[in-house]
Length: 78
Image (cartoon, rainbow, N blue to C red; front, side, top):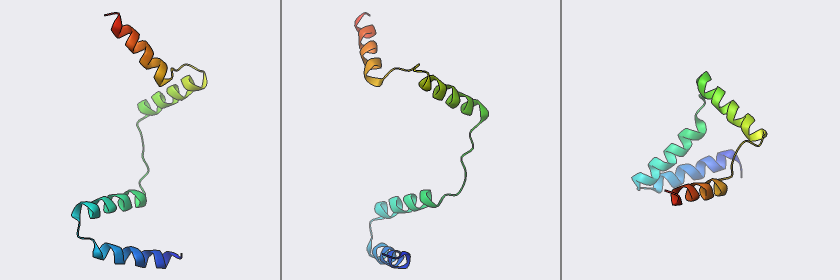
């Protein structure tokens, strides 16, 4: 299917929808997909992300299920 054909189908479909909530959701999706701004994080956050990435590469992390087991153990000791 060509781009022009897809656009035409979208226009036709949008014209038939009266559900405001559905239209707003579609608009949010389209706005998100066409957003061109680059997300720029502060250096402090980038440092934390890099630190976490290195921790994971070095095996310094715990799987979710293991963390839950340890939390349950600690809670049962209270």
